[in-house]
Length: 254
Image (cartoon, rainbow, N blue to C red; front, side):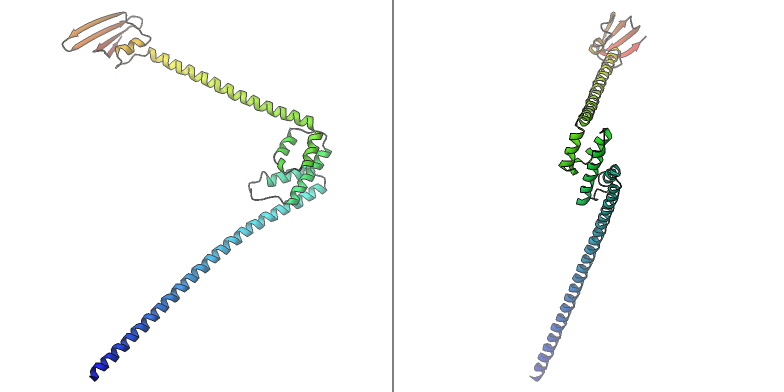
C-alpha cells in the first residue's frame, strides 16, 4: 500500500514539472513573438520617417528655390527690368523641367506687376509679346489683361488674324498634300492594274488571258487526244505562242 502511494507522488511531481516546463516554453515563445513584432514595427516607423524626411527635404528645396526666384524678381522690378522679370518667372515656373516648383502668391503678384509695368511703358505690341503672354494668361489678373487689350487691341487683332491665317494655310497645305498623295496612289494603283493586264504567265486560265490586254488570239490551233485537249494561241502583235493543256496555260514561246 505504501509503495502505491510513493508511485502516485512521483507521477504527480513529474506532471507538475511537465506543466511548468510547458508554461516556460509558452512564455519564451510569447516573448520572442512580442520582440519580433516590436522590431518589425520599429523598422516600419524608421522607413516611414526616412521617407517623410526625404519628401520634406525635396519640398524644402523647391520652396527655397521658389523664394529665391521671388527675391530675384523683386530685384529686377526695382531695377525696372520688367521684361527680364517676366522671362525669369516663365523660365522657372512654366518652362522648367521640375513641374513641382510652384510660385508663391507674392511671386504671382510680382509677375502681374512686372507685366503691367512693362506694357504701360511699351509703345508697340508684337508677336513675341503675344506668345510671351499666352504662356501663362491664367495667372494674370483682370486689371492687367484689360490694360493690355485696351491699349493694344488693334495689334492683338492683327496678330490673332495672322495666326489664324497661318493655321488656315497649314490646314490647306495638309489637305492639298493628302489630296495629292491620294491622287498619286490612285495613279500608281491604276498603273499596277494596267501592267497586270499586260502580263501573261504560266498557270493562267484561258479566261484570265482573255481578260488581259492581249485579248483574243489571232489564231487558235486545237489538238484533241485521249489525254485531253491542247490549244496553241497565236498572238502576232506580241510575237508569242501560248500553249494550253485542258484550259491552263503551260508554255509561252516566242
